[in-house]
Image 1: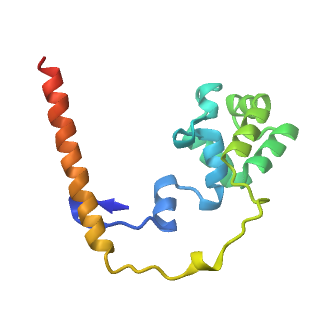
Image 2: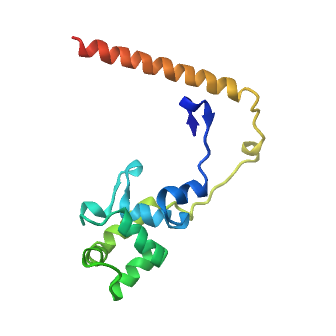
Image 3: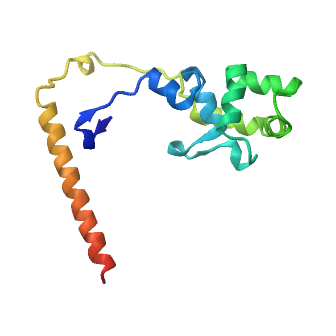
Length: 153
């Protein structure tokens, strides 16, 4: 992702993911099912079970590995404090629905055409990106000026 203020690109790695979420990246989908995903407009369990947050979700996923393993365990024995146990058993269908919404479909037959795989000419990429950032900056200035002009009316 571009970091304009630092005039460089930043690459997000597994190391960054683990440092940020303190959880194995393999649990990412399960974690997003529990916590929700604003980008996909999927609400997390905390909307129906206040108190069930990131720390609880990470702790339980570290122990059980996946959402389905966690829900299966919660259906036959106590997996955490009462509020977590109740949330998991009462809202298991809600969490499974989140999983369906957030999962990538793997049963889609994708057909690639060979011409799509031709190596792309990248010689102009830096010029194109530079132009894009200049345009973006100008757009932000205009937007700010127009917003300022509207607020002075």
